[in-house]
Length: 413
Ligand code: NIG
Ligand code: FE
Image (cartoon, rainbow, N blue to C red; front, top):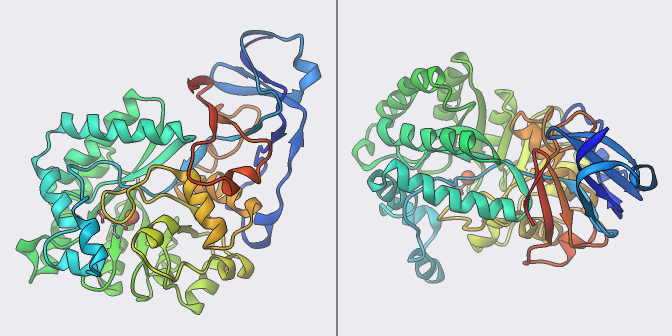
């Protein structure tokens, strides 16, 4: 066999193999670490994982000597908002003066200011800007990313955002999973008529389905935005139309969005900072993945973080994401989130690796194709400038990537 690429002399290898669903509770601590392996890649797929000595003589177009480095699956970032116009650096000063996130939104800033910028931007401008962020994510080891609309809040601009994501997915290596988040905030013209706004978003769902512009529908279930009841009715309609659902739940106030996510059989409930005891035990009894976003809690300047320990100890499946967006979490760096998960969520390195690979993939219905290295699977692989898997959450704030292999090709070196 002539391989396209052989990665030899791997130090520690995490394959995260054999999971057939989200990895839950205590199982998140069990990590198989292979040593002294090599990987042979052909036609974009992992064709063999063998002892390094067995592939020493193999014919290959290209050989990378990992020289004892750590090798893992490409990271999966399961919650981001990477298509938007403008930026919000002016809000940092407001935050320093103590103006709360929801207050900035109430005054027409925050999400609504990004909505104004996104309305103004052309499809081409949004494409170029989003591509810049995607390339940066990939440089940090991310090979699959979820992205949400939600900075349009009207038919035209929501569809514009989703079309940009579709075209980015078709024209670039990184895999993009799209979510329609039309119910992200209430536009000023609907301030006194939320029902009519949600109806308008519901009507667009058919078009989105027809053009295959999104797989998931999401809603911001929060004080001053959408209530649990409104979220429930809206997402039920989305499910009837054939979408899978997600919820921005209990991010700031504990409203009961976590319970709703489980009730609806959502692929994920996201944020969950204020998740109740009941919500956590519901999660444990379900396959809904808790997508935790400690970067957002950090950046909002809050002291209490999502109760990851309780979630895992009770048996829930936890994933981690950047929540990359221009307001509450301006960072593309998922490695930084891994450090915050260790320091603020008290997750162990073993749990963290599950949370950014296999569980992150299941949170966006990509468990069968992303988040694991296995023979026959698409070869999305990262070689790290690190001697072992403990090292990435430990040495924080910098980029440890040595090489990113996407679909079998080294794309970042
Ligand atoms: O996940 N909470 C709502 N949406 C985003 C923030 C979006 C923004 O501030 O632009 C979040 O935190
Ligand atoms: Fe978000």
